[in-house]
Length: 150
Image 1 (cartoon, one colour):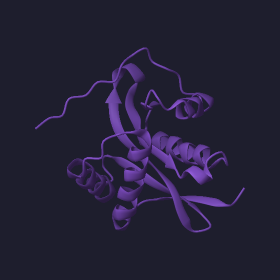
Image 2 (cartoon, rainbow, N blue to C red):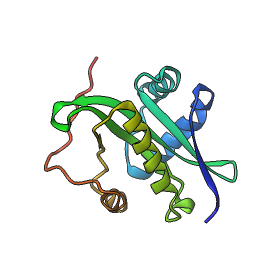
Image 3 (cartoon, rainbow, N blue to C red):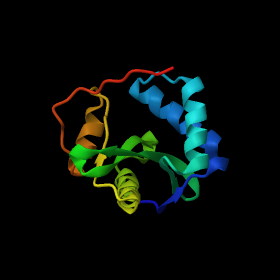
């Protein structure tokens, strides 16, 4: 396995993160709405108040990222981390990089005081569901729903 490192993403990596988000969304069949995604990435990277973003590198080359936001849910004991994105380039999968990236997110979420991490992989992405199950995530008998606000 090649050596990898994980570091926080800063505002100067906005374009790189947007490229990764676009690749992730394309692979998972998620519509990429640049009017929503681009400013949201900017806000997350500039503020730090809403969560964090981390870049996975191998030999100095970015090969993936993870993004988690801060939430609150009394069911899970209060502070909650929401893993919104975790993406590793296809040729780097199966090498332990994704598990290392997830472990970093878990460490950071713990430092926020989070009691749990929540995520919603796409139903059709069986490989992602298996990956998260192996990492200790359990299914909730729910259906994710959302409504855009003006």
